[in-house]
Structures are given as C-alpha cells and as structure tokens.
Length: 197
Image (cartoon, rainbow, N blue to C red; front, top):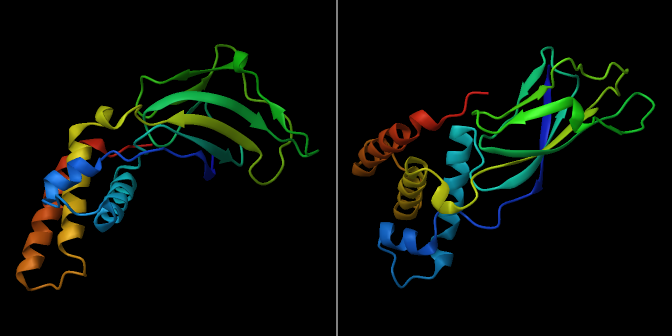
C-alpha cells in the first residue's frame, strides 16, 4: 500500500495557545497580538510536524493508489474522530462509494484504524492509476484545553523562544546555549507524543 497524498478539507478555527496564555508566558502584556501571533502559529505548525499530529479538529482526505494489502489501514494525524466516507474510482472514471456496511473504525486506537468488517474484502475492480481511493476523515482534539499539557507547553516554549530571538541564533554566543536548552526541553515534552503510523 502506497500513501499518495493528503488534502485539507476544513481546517481548525483556532489555535491551541490563546493570546492570554502567550502574554503570560512571554511577558508580552499590553502588546498587540500582531507582535507575537505569527510565532505561536509557527511553533504550533512545527510541533505538529515533529509529532506527526493535527491538534484541533479538522477534516482531511487521504488518497491511496491501491487498497491495503491487509484488512486494515492506520489513518494519519492521530485523535481520529470519524471517517466520513471511503470512495474509489475505477478505470472507467465513475467514482463509487464503498458502503460503510463493509468497514468499521476504531477511534480508541492511536493512530485510528479503518478495517474491513468480518468476512468482507476490498473492491476488486481495476482502479484508475493515480489517487483512485479517497478516504475522508475528521481528526484532532475538540478544544484547545483538551490538547495534552506536554504538547501545549512545547508550543509555548518554542513560541517564546522565537519571540525573544527574532533572528537566527549564532553558535558560540549565550543565545546558542539557550537554544540547546530549549531543544532539550521541547524534545523531552514531546517524546511520548510522536505518532507512529
């Protein structure tokens, strides 16, 4: 099975760190959020990349070139909430929905799993060559406060560092020592939250 690509359908409407939390953490009280919000967004995106997760609820499409070799498929990004549909496009180009009567989902596993129901099999038609299989799913925690504290703390650490050091850190000065300490701190916080798919 080859994972071809993912596509965002509906993104989250907020970030896991509020302006008030960033102000308290970085002592930016009284400053406009425009002064630091880009660092919070960059930090959150960076931590999502490190962990392989998407933090707040959002909808994605996963495209595959072929059906899994086994009877199950792990879905990316963690905190699977639901699978909206499974569709496939045969070589004749007519997209077809693979009925949910034939598959089931586990949202209690990490990562979440889509599996064939007992006695079922994947469709045996000849598929279109590129991206013939489309799986739409919802993932992520429901609210910022539901995101685990180690992840939120790592985002704050990195955002605070970016805010304080607005240029690249030069190796050999005092700031580089702080950068190494930051790296160790955020890495330690995230070590148990890296998603293995």
